[in-house]
Length: 222
Image (cartoon, rainbow, N blue to C red; front, side, top):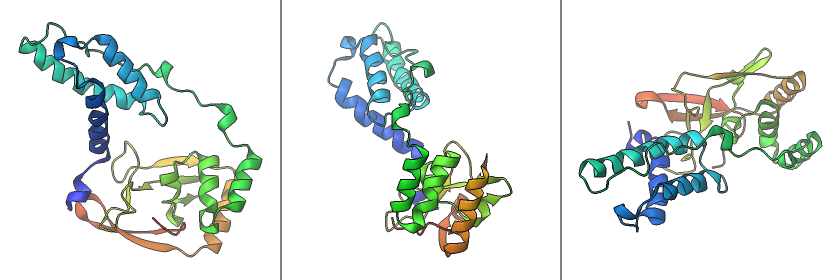
């Protein structure tokens, strides 16, 4: 398996987390760190822009607490200021309903986007798929009354040396999938798209470097 394949998305997220943590709190001496510093940091990194999910922040804060626990054991600080710092799911950012496209706006977007991406608009709106999942849609996803979501486009798919154009779904292993019921209008959109678009074969490295082939219907242009 290539070194590129072995680097997981969680590892990237962890590096990004600490790359943000160090400039914010790294200049303070250990004895000067207070619980409120970590509470504010966790809320800020969760809440700003496309912030990290509450569960992701909580997982990373466990690592921070473990690092500071070592300082307690070494008697460099008396207490661990990061212990049990968590973002409550109740505090998670709610969706602004005014930002959700109306059916008319969805149709407008679908009507102006490049034809090969038209279906991805409806897959996101009508089945709740992530953009990366919608771009990985293939004929095998089409099932009677539902779609089977198994792959998503890799965040590294645009790189010339990328061997893993498609990766398993978030928080799922290769081979696992998510079934999503679809309304009749979605079935019509899917069937229309499949009948008009030629499949684009993409070969990529799956589990343990095994080569796989997926025929997607949104021509990749990454």
